Image (cartoon, rainbow, N blue to C red):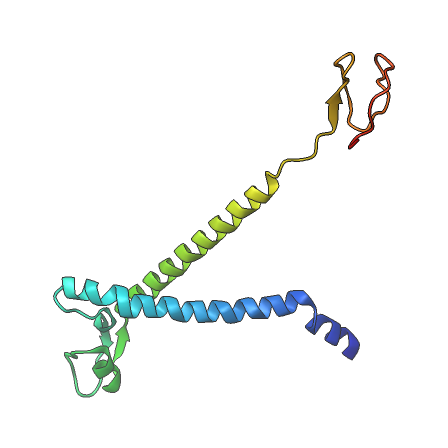
Length: 153
């Protein structure tokens, strides 16, 4: 059983999956930073200096009773909040990641199509005497029985 586990653990697919998860986690951090640090600040400025992280709805007051200026202040007071601003940030992060994955898959598919379009070697040729189509490796024409040069000669 230990040998089977070792074989499973060191298979290329398991290692590839682990690398994919690690790269995906790092890419998620980059996407989160892009949304939080690059995309949302200009949107907040356009909306009058609003930080989306501070968009929340108080469901149950804490002590002291609000209104609360920020989500951090509401959470510190023990208020129960519905954090729709954080949801908007998470949704935008998802859209950025989804678009990046779309572009990656599109590029991979384009490269695969290019590889598949590679020209194949011809399988037929014309007899130089009767001009009938014959296999490329034929040394005698089956139509006119003429002797032909061997392929590649």
